[in-house]
Image 1 (cartoon, one colour):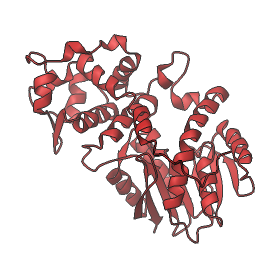
Image 2 (cartoon, rainbow, N blue to C red; image 1 turned 30 degrees about the vertical axis):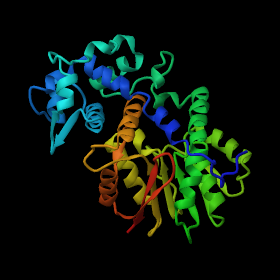
Image 3 (cartoon, helix red, strand yellow; image 1 turned 90 degrees about the vertical axis):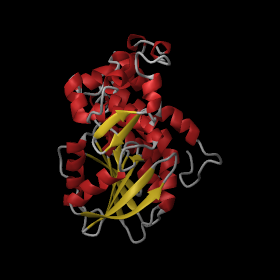
Image 4 (cartoon, rainbow, N blue to C red; image 1 turned 120 degrees about the vertical axis):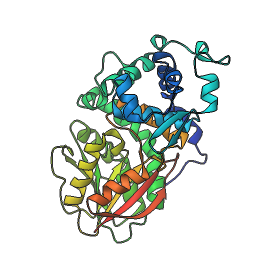
Length: 342
């Protein structure tokens, strides 16, 4: 097994960005060829809400789409108002002599673009990777075969991210960590490897809990990392922990459930405890960064969530009694917001 305290000798960020941006072009194709979005918007500024009303779309996917287009330089945001840029007006608006629309494929030629258009119309995620024989990610995770596949996907990413996060966190004096929806347990194991006085628990639903127990044993951490089977959305979190970790978890859920999870954490963590939100974050005005806006499209397609801004997470955490402590980097343009319970 890989030593969880050792980083690779090279930086794979460019490789990660290819994966994270995989669905962004299909979002652009869906808007350009599916409903001629830029031509319509060229008539005058609109808000996210008015876009939803005009096209009968849902808020979450429209927020993700417009954030991508602002970050790409095709829209500008002035308060709540969205307008096309001069570049978009010249190249993305039908009737312009430089209109590039015919150069791009039809939506029906792109399976992901087709499903993104459905996401806009329904507000719901598509089947995982647009597979015809799968349900959406949340439902598919209840099956053994898919849970093993997806957990392995997140584990290979976590080997890099977890050690980078663990090296940058100050956990002096902390004793017990609860890794909420912790998947394979790679984050819990890595944090334990870097902080010898720390014991950790991975909390996840069946069948992921069994996958995690096996992975933890294989990594040799069974004496310091255990597993609790539980559904974080429907069951109170166990007490007795002075650290809660949400690593790449909150971005899977829409705003109401993100707030619910933060409230659940605040209700069970020890006074003075740390809550760590490890993720990719948009900037406050949702003008970028581009790579996060691109990744948000992937999340919108496959989950019930999207990427959130640091301000959004901080505001919602503050509402339930957490105060910000620090913002630390991990790897591959991920980072963590650290909060303390009042």
